Length: 172
Image 1 (cartoon, rainbow, N blue to C red):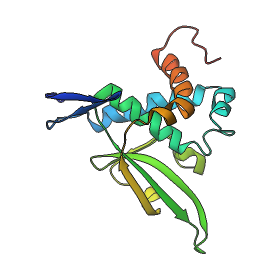
Image 2 (tube, rainbow, N blue to C red):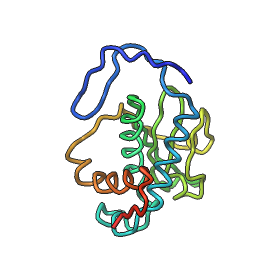
Image 3 (cartoon, rainbow, N blue to C red):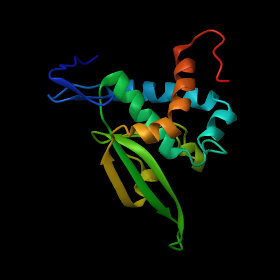
Image 4 (spheres, one colour):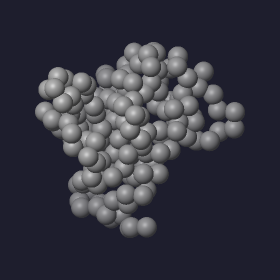
């Protein structure tokens, strides 16, 4: 396990940012964290998802999932990934959909690809699935308190209970 030299920490709102070079988490540690969050999100009842305007989770929830995963990785490891969104087109050039995920130092982290029939957790350095997208929008993740409060906070609270492994945990 790498040793993290976490010096000169500062906070921007609720987000931790490490200003000095850090030996961060391994790809496997990130995969484990992504898998744990995905399992919790999959276990959350439909009512919670409907409250944040997702009627058929995971379909349409990629932005929510990317935000939740970024928050989880920041809290767990102090990392701040990039939020990436690309548009996907069919062979005929017609727009099919858009999709959002995270990237951290060249590692793709996607916990909502199952809405397209892809694996539910993708943590990899190269993905032909993601490379098909065009018209990329990319920015460093930053917590937006207003958006988070409206679209993610309730889901996060339910996921946090499930990830804690509390006996009899409920998302109701």
